Length: 140
Image (cartoon, rainbow, N blue to C red):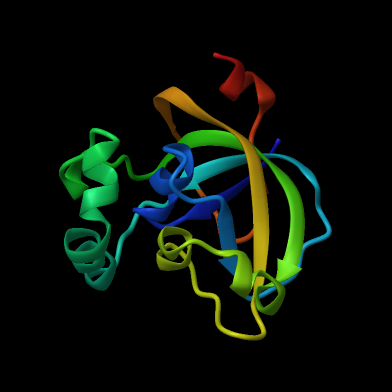
């Protein structure tokens, strides 16, 4: 299965159903299953953003502290449904969805659906861009 590493807290936001669109600088043509891997590192500005902007979202989902978010692990599986320019998505976004992405012109939104949060994170190495994980790893 294809996988993508995403920084925390965004990977967990997808797993918890708080984020439905992943914004990136490039368009993708891939449609189908995708494992969401929480990257190993997190920048200090994302930690601060979690504390000041996202904390209320995560508290309602039972995650009161950044340190409770897994790093270096697959946290969910979803389906890539579509990819659209951010300009075409701008008028359809909720305030919450907008806060979880970079919707500046020239970027693309990967529309995610059928998100399944894993009961337990599966710790594994992530990579830049798409990478493959064994289906047997996720079957367990």
